[in-house]
Image (cartoon, rainbow, N blue to C red; front, side, top):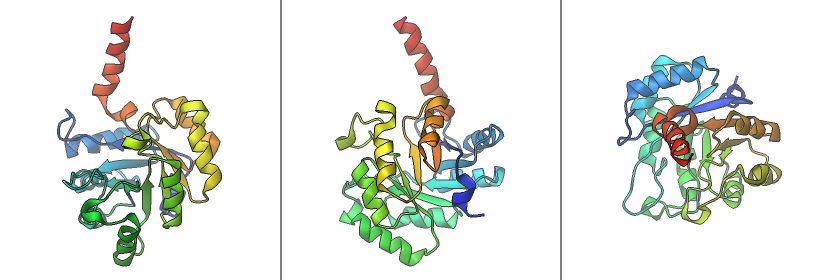
Length: 229
């Protein structure tokens, strides 16, 4: 069974905590992944070779791997260069996700050139495009990505305010009419009902992160509502 077959129709849980967050720890992320697996998740999205190695030692779920790293000459920080690709391939990621936006990449390398470089070195790598607009998703398909994703919708300066859940997932519906490559819905999917709706519309799988694995944000939703009342 291919990795795409393994994740079809299910929930992928993003288990990530950045250095400034209270749960930042490869051990904690691995336990979070185990909890997600026990809850029925069919895959994990994780950041950094250290977290991924620890998660792989604790679960058998397919992993979508990324490396978040800042570069002075670019706003792209999700698996931005071959350095990150090499790290993820070395740790045995099932799928590698990378920024597929139109933003300038480190060193001025174009997305097209970057994809060719990856394919030349790692012919069997399964690549997922983290896009922020409908147009970027279509471009990613034309560049030969194996999976397309809405991960960055609303998170680039030019997509600010965009939420794929708006108007009953209007943007997601548009994407699904324009591409043939499997689409993963990700970004601002914060309820079980929204996740279910994405699958009803025909996405390959759904990724949920903050609503499950970032307790400080979950807590804040409660406290904000209490204060509002």
